[in-house]
Image (tube, rainbow, N blue to C red; front, side, top):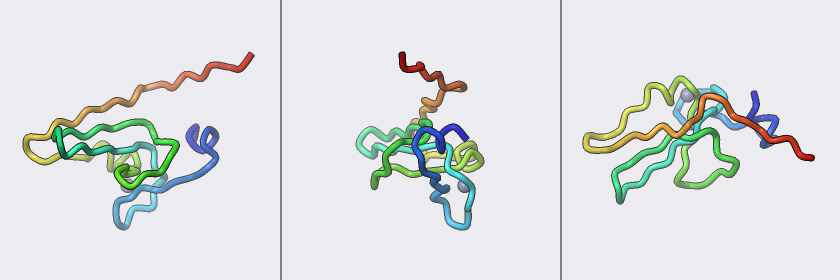
Length: 81
Ligand SMILES: [Zn+2]
């Protein structure tokens, strides 16, 4: 998995009873009633939730919330030099 290579760590889905490898970071903003799905965040922060692909696809947000998927299908890495 590319995230393991890039970040040097393996994180797991934060859902109970799920031991799948995390692939997505979920961020909430209660103030604006929005939730974002991003490629796995490099840093682990209290308001970020790691999810596996399966749970990310199943994710639903409360009524009135907007769910924004900011993931890109392919990640491009610029080679140094
Ligand atoms: Zn999961």
